[in-house]
Amino acid sequence: MSYFRAENLSLHFGGLKAVDAVSFAVEKGEILSIIGPNGAGKSSIFNLISRIYRPTSGRIFFEDQDITEQPPYDIAKLGIARTFQNIELFENATVLSNLLVGRHRHSTTRLWQELLFLPSVRANEKVHRRRVEQVIEFLDLEPYRDKLISGLPYGVRKVIELARALCSEPKLILLDEPSSGLNVEETGDMSFWIRDMKNELGVTVLMVEHDMSLVNRVSDRVIALNYGRVLAMGSPAEVQQHPDVVAAYLGA
Amino acid sequence: MRFLFKTSYEDDIKLFPHLGYFVSYGILLALLLIAPYVLSSYLMSQLVFVCIYATVGVGLLILTGFTGQASLGHAAFLAIGAYTAAYLQKYNVPFPAYFLAAGALTGLIGAMVGFPALRLTGIYLVIATISFALIVEEILARWESVTNGNEGMRVKTLSLLGVTVPRDSPTFYFLCLAVLVLTIVGTLNLLRSPTGRAFVAIRDSETAARSMGVNVALYKVKSFAISAAITGFAGVLFAHKLSFISPEMFTLQLSIEFIIVVLIGGTFSLHGAVLGAIFIVMIDPFLTYLKDDMPGIIAGIAATFGAGPATAGNIQSKVAAFASLNGLKGAIYGIIIVLFVLFEPLGLYGRWLKIKLFFQLFPLYKRATFKRQKIYVKSERNR
Image 1 (cartoon, each protein chain N blue to C red):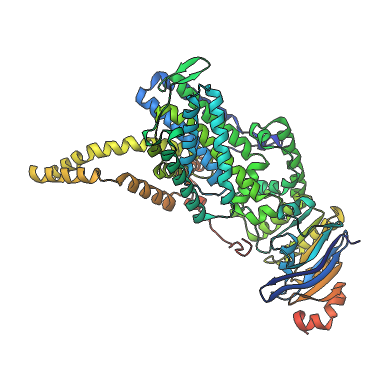
Image 2: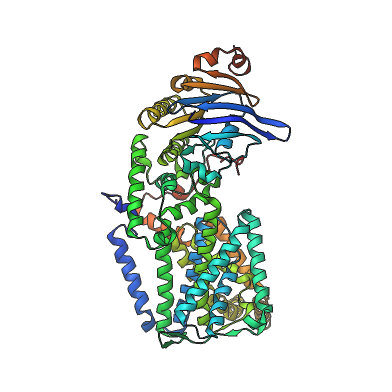
């Protein structure tokens, strides 16, 4: 069985079929990219997986468990983290506390223990902090630890969002356009990080991306969507040469 | 300028990061402890009200400042705490028991208010909490077998472990101070642990909080419950301080005063609650002073500019009539809120930080340091 699987996933807004019977599978440890023109339903698929939307029909499986009916906060607890196309950080908090929120799914302390800040809470905080520091080191975020998000530039925010997702120690990470708004150099860094996430941290990656050079550099497989339907699926080279994809998205 | 050199993760968890904190808070504590033996009984009474208002302010800050859920119903929570105490007193329940019971009951009712509030945001939530406060006010006036209706209830003198504690005694002040300090310490503990961070996450982006595994509904209810429980505890002390409670004490005006406490103090730090409480408790005698003395002063000024005695007298009576207009206090409160929101959105504590930074950076301080630009618009689609 596949690691992650979507079966006949559909999302209809009235007559509009944003996602129309899409099926795909992600194998453990691979990087799968979803490409397609604007409005093809790429982000909608992500929002279906993280349960911001409820699918009209179809099912989603993760590690052989049906997660279609799970509440949204449980998706993160299962080990699926995500980033957002238009950065959703906690703006009036420091980078550190943003990243510590990423650790939320690992917090075990109870409210009354926290009110008294018992030694167990203190010990847990230090464990969380150590994990966060590992991610900070991984993504070179050391200069920003105590800065407020609202004062940081876009490129850094993008990385912090990735860091927050990594702090939850996900098994599967959903990246919604990781390179949008980044310059060439930052996009290069991002592609290295995505490969390292897979190779060093063993995270499976599902990503939506427009930058074809980034897609080519990191992806193991690519899915092309248009009007909510799968046009083509396969290796980056195969998909790029597919006549339907060329017609709908890439151009001749 | 001080640069903290951090050597362990412990350094970021500490409540008092460096020696300066121990010194300044030590001095503050010492001053607060000798206050009852130095200050006049009127000022002591004001100080007790500062403690009670600040406790409510901390409670409201958890909900409004840190979880981002506005509430104009906190007078109702205060009332529930106060009436629980007064009611249980009739059955000779000892103080510690009814103090805890009042907090627990208010917390429970806070959670119940939290559930319908899950589906509401912004202005709608404000309206819902106002309605809740009006309902409670009405229940207090009508449920005569328990609340004695509009007649109000007498609150017996507090007795703690067999010792009576009159409402103007130093012991009562110390009790209020202890409740405030414990509330602040508990809240600080909460804010540096996962629950507090979840609150802040909900405030800044519910979508992101949810996708990080925060059960948004559960934490909103928790926030409502904690905020209400703290207000309930304050309500018990409020009842004892006034020694008489009736429904018309817990009106919308009181809820607005609590909002002023957090708005004017500053919504991003617990310091704000205390500063706001001092402000709101002190503004009342100040307004009374203005009301009594302003007409005479203005008439005096008019006289020095050559107005005859008749004109001066006329001016004096006009100003006096204006000063005793109904609703003037509400209008002044409104103007204060508007001015603060426009010109000092970070509140009194924010102003204090700016002054501090000015001296630390002297002569390099720039006015734009605290100016926050909104550079990127967040996605509105997933709300």
